[in-house]
Length: 449
Image (tube, rainbow, N blue to C red; front, side, top):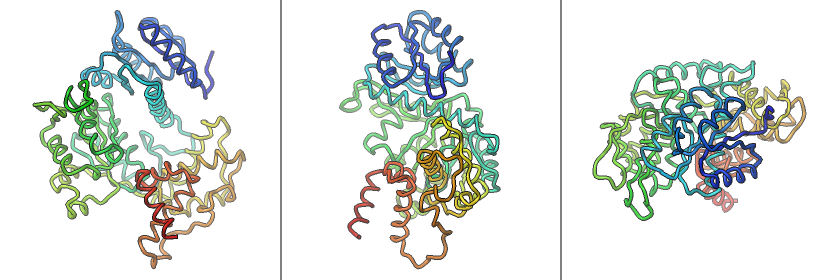
């Protein structure tokens, strides 16, 4: 029986019946369709006869191991994600599993929440890959999920091709929401490291006290709670690429350690006595002017020079007017498929309003708005009245140059909140800040009013 588009199918492979039972019960409770197997050969038989979206496999099993199953899936099933679970968690095991194609690596024992979070992340990655390969006919895809026909985005793609052909460090700059991670992924998958892992790291989203361990790993006993050795993001990215987003958020001490990785191609795990060599392409990104932060002493000058070997500057969406309609059609088709309804058409007036708006949140803001429109209306034709108010009454910037910076920021925050229906988490993503910072700004705005 062929599953419906909305039905996600998971294959659980483990030789421990109690583990299989727990996984199956939890996944079925989340409305996943679940197949089970106690050995790799049994799993391969199921894969040969059934479409599977996600394989969750144990590492060590009698006979053929989980690593062999990962290799089989990666070589034969390009539309299936892989997640490995193991009771024998080691640095080497994690690195080998991810190098062979596992998108998620989960050590036993794990909580139900940890399991479901890993499954959700795996499906998000699968969805991104499927969307990038199944664009609607009217969408012009330059390559690797990058959508556009404008001269500005074509220039980005040309630089991207050059950046992917060299092991040199790449720095991606651009406003929040322009698609820096998408460009980083394109660089990776266009390079000779495409078969290796791509590891994205949000440097601003990890507490400073944990960031060193997350980046470089730690050995057993390195600090309280370090009950075993754990690979860091750099070891996980071995043979592939690591994407360091919001690079300017690193502390000076971590900048020094990152500089050593750039210079010597080696990392030292927290608590270790000697460094280990790593073979990783480093791609960094920022929405800030790094040269200005260098002058302020926030970013080390030598680190800036090491990062700024090849620079890819992504233009804001307001400079890509020709791409707005392509992106609108792409997102409309994407969310229509998720909601299992036909993709709507946009009236000429609605399209003009979309092109007229200056998009302070860039592509991410456009995506959020199109998603909201499709959730809130079932009409086959989207007209101006269906658009958020900030698009219906928007105007190009330039006529209000007498406003202070604080007034501009206030207006921007309010507009972004409106565009995402008041969702503070999404607004923080569009603004490129964390929820705590957004709360502080909203509190200040409230006090001013």
